[in-house]
Image 1 (spheres, one colour):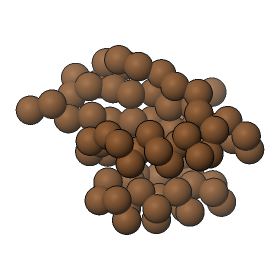
Image 2 (cartoon, helix red, strand yellow):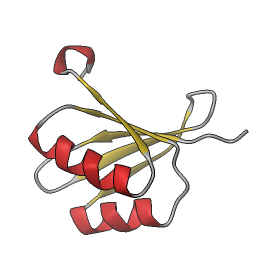
Image 3 (cartoon, one colour):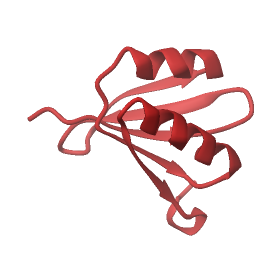
Length: 81
């Protein structure tokens, strides 16, 4: 089973991704703009997305749920810098 988990760090202009395999080892990192972010998820099989809960995270969570991807929003105190 080859599951893919993506951790997302949202910012104003650049979005940072960390892609992990089923053993939670980071296999790839990406710096994307908002339009690249949309295309990146539209072209890949992703099982789970994890991101810090903020105003824009709720928008992206609804958008990713529309693609059939499970999203978990974490409270800020559980996210480390």
